[in-house]
Image 1 (cartoon, rainbow, N blue to C red):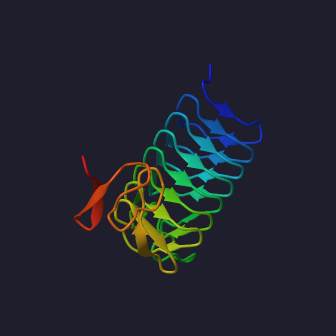
Image 2: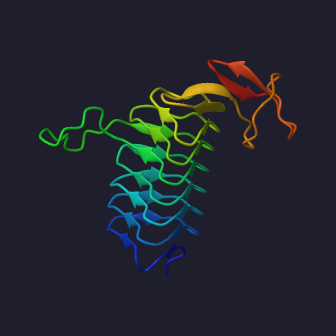
Image 3: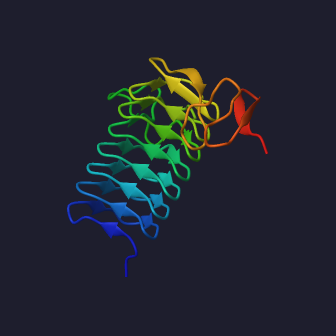
Length: 186
């Protein structure tokens, strides 16, 4: 008995693990070797490439392809039509045959609609990538990134609100700078 939902228009290949409570909606393709955590949601027309690892509580909106080499940790949000790449120098004449650049989207990060994450770059915990931004370098934890190429324009709280100049949030959390990123003040 399945303890997850797959819409009848979607395809799930062999050798796939899907966690309890996950939902795969219309016209999706989940390819061989994928490991998907609990309570995830995949909107219409999502493609999950071979051997991709996806944590618990992940939300992927419509029209997103997550290619081999990309890993999404727990509670990641991927906005509509966000883009991942997995080859740094793609050529039709010279295929890479399974040699893909690794990209990790760390726990709690959010990727806005139509943003692009160029392969080989990681997005830090609870970072927020603005709609349409193009990530071309590693993103620190809690960074607010926008533009082409994406640059840090501020900091965000775990709850998603922008932090003030004292690195405090209206929700009551506060942070301090450490190693080019933020850490919560305990």
